[in-house]
Image (cartoon, rainbow, N blue to C red; front, side, top):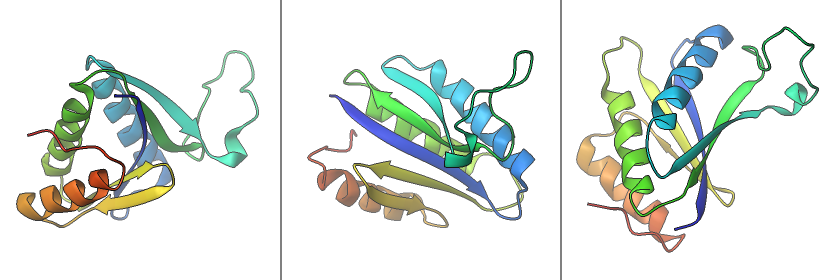
Length: 132
């Protein structure tokens, strides 16, 4: 499988610094998963290189993660990680936005069965079967 998925995370009432932290945490979790290649995507305003000795991306620049699915288990691992992140202990509701070839789905406030059905439909439009 050779699929690129853009992942954006959200949390109600989160400020830019909180969103940056969430993206960094999920990026690091996904980097531990075989069959995934994860990179941060900068927003259009974050396209200039950072000065030497500074962070490359700040709170205002983190907008998404680019995840390349490299192996057959990659999609399963990506979806499992994102589902876990949505369920993980937090007070404010969270969202995950997935984009493949300009097609977008946002997962929020849905139970597991609804989420699975939505994902099957979304992935099916791209000729991808959701792993069991």
